[in-house]
Length: 157
Ligand code: SF4
Ligand code: SF4
Picture 1 (cartoon, rainbow, N blue to C red):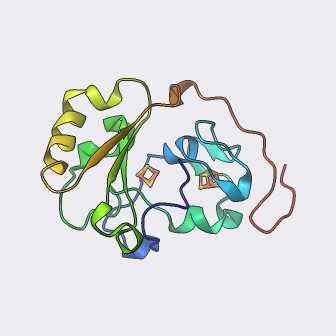
Picture 2: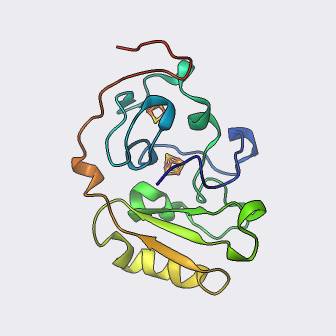
């Protein structure tokens, strides 16, 4: 899944929640400016956050999953993606129109079948089509992607 194709961008100040200890999208998603494939840990991930924070690409500064962007109170704290095993994104309503779809990104096979995730998916399906994306392996065992470029084209260690 390409993080550039989904969700309207936002600044962290506009989002009702903060990621906290979650960093699963740093593994699960393609980050094109870093040439980081989906399903590989970003070379900058650390146990305490982004090790390239000051120079992280703009997409890392402005892309957030639905849990962070949840202004409607759909999700609880227990639905944080690293706890739930899935995270949700929505196709951009400005380009998708009536075809807007919510995507469920599984962090490991079967994550969307767990009761907590099933309950949320069932709730969302009342309002909009929901598509479950097959897991790309298990992100808990994901290899580390080689560091390549920063967003401004400078090589990083
Ligand atoms: S999956 Fe959501 S909560 Fe987790 S790090 Fe990414 S944007 Fe933050
Ligand atoms: S640069 Fe930082 S914020 Fe961006 S994917 Fe890598 S670890 Fe995550």
